[in-house]
Image 1: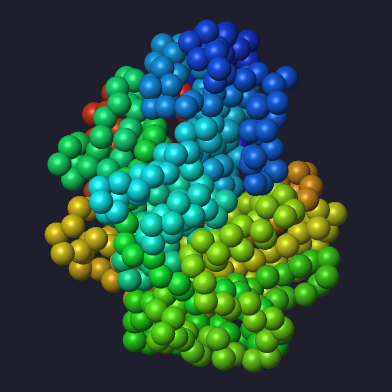
Image 2: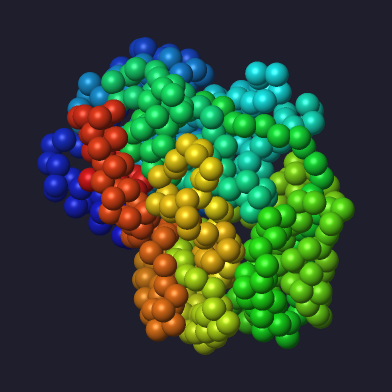
Length: 496
């Protein structure tokens, strides 16, 4: 597998700097001495519960031990031990939803599982929701709604807060309010030195901006303070169409993206191919955040016929996220995905779909034993920060309008058998080349790659632009001068 090859290369590159399984077990013993109630070995029920909590099977690696900190101080103590070992590799798990193997767990080494650090509280006179980094979005919404509040967060309840926010984050309310990371008013962060700092608009503002898109390169976030706003119901959900409706649905999505911008319309359009059943199924999952004005710009998408199932409801955000979670956790499988972005045109969505539809059955046929399902999903990007608000690190200027102009594509394979992993990864690379070739041909290809949907072989940090990546490197050198998060954390997208 590709990750194994990367790990082998990293061992060659850094030599003895990376610990063997025996050395990592020695580090585990030291961690167990310092954090005896938070360190778990493979024979412990808590260890096995942590491994089984990963939603995708390829993520269920087996570290030498798992640390489940209960406070920022616990994280600080663990980082100090890991840094002093100078060789033990480690990973950090928030919700564990990133599909790239090795990004949130590790084979041998140490995994810091944040799930015990999951407090959620409303503070500052109902203006802020404080979220510990191990909390899942379902708990955040359930807690906030008790005070008639909500936040910019994930659209699936079982997704974790930490990776979502530090990768940018697209919310139900993003068309109106922008990236979810831009609603973070403060990050509590444990640095490689073990120091616990707060990063916000006035304290460590460079780190504050870097964490909004730069993910795991600077430290471990232990708490997010999120801007709260009044909770409302939203209208929408899943609509499944007959296969004959695919072209009309893609036409309606193109018109939606090309027409007048509607800040209350959110969601995506997917075409799904089930190789075992030999069927293509078009689906829209769309929401309107001002139910009294529905369906707004969604009208043409939601009126496409024929429809097989209409699951649209008006409900609190928490109900929508709970419904979405049921589909994610029902039947764990292996999955890999990749992403690219392009400007909308009258033909680009149709051309991408036609190419994918022609090729994907042949790809799936080669690995029929793995019972593959393939998807392509089209959706919009949020707006960058404007009006003098604090910057993020995603690379868009305040003058750009990605929310109006751009579409990002997610290409997915879901399957049963590990033996098919390498083949589907190569297929993802081939699809990206073909699809980006079409976009280049039309002059609509955009550099941006959404980090939370990027494959391990992509470089989303480079897609922010060279100037932004250089700035992120400077911040990483400042707050982690010894490169602990570059060298000892093999997973994630790196700056060096």
